[in-house]
Amino acid sequence: MRRRHFLTAAAAGTTAAVVPLVAARPYAVGTSEVIRLRSGLDALTALDAAKGGHEALERAALAGAAEALELQKRAASQRIRQRLFSVAADYTKAAAWSLLDAGSARQATGHLDRALCLAGMAQDSVAELGVWNLYAMAARQQQDYTQAVSAAQAALATRITRRDPLFASLAHARTAVGQSPLQDRQGALRSLGYAEEALAKAPEDTPRPAWMDFYGLAELLALTAVVRGYIGDAAGAEAASHRALAAIPQQFRRNRAMVTLQLALGQLHQRDIDQACGTTEKVFALMDGTPLPGRMRSLFGDFHRDLITLSPDANTVREWRDRYRSEWSHT
Image (cartoon, rainbow, N blue to C red; front, top):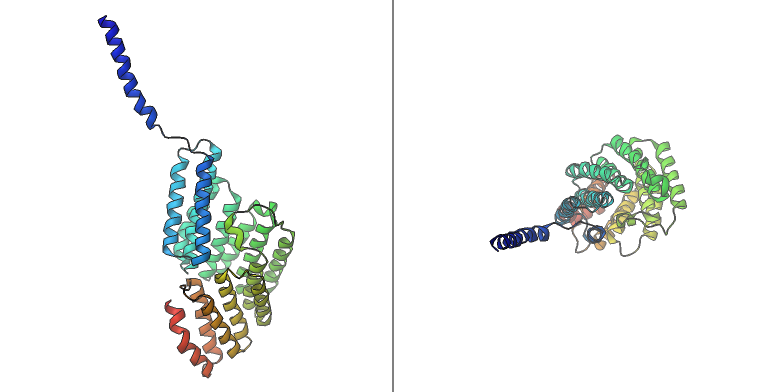
């Protein structure tokens, strides 16, 4: 009886010790967590569209990346692990974009280095292209145009460009933007031609990540205006800007504001001083109630500099400077 009592008690003690361990075992992370994190990423994309890059968006994006990386440690399969690496890459890329939009290209580069590593571990060519696209933009902000071309060509070399012409079109257009400040007129126009051809072949019903929603005919026309401006074709830049504005949906006011400012530059470089200054008023009207992103303030700086260079003594110039300088430089 004593032996039976001891065995029963021992078994009960063992069970009591085992049960908490089983209950505390972490669950395997599966598709539902990937979907949840993806939906959070889509929400950040929508926030960026509404407010532009800002510090809170960067923090939220980095928090999302950290959560995805923590969850991948408990992934139910290698496929789920790779999908979580992909999510982490996209969140990190979103953090980099928030800095780029704020005009902080140098700080963004660290996030892009990390995002590229994560995209490689995910074996996700779409994420890789997205990172290279932002590398090209960061290099252009820092006026390193040779590196901007190299980054755009790296984007063009990713696998997704062979499967989906829309991504190829973006990479070609970004290459043209990098080539044009280098005064490679022929190369820039050739790259624009490739971008147009690829866009025409891109099917509209192909599922793509939300961050790619920005790219289409309107964005290609906006980039065409940038390229035309760099190669000295101010009339072509103005025409492309008008076409882009006709194609941009009304709700994308930040995109409309950027293209409107590009239109003003095209008009200014044709010596249409009064018209160019009047066009910038539309930019402030579009952005009323919203801080100007760093990229936009930088473009206003270009406009102001060229305005003074072309017509330093005109009344219109003085009026514009007095009325708007503090608004664009300190908003």
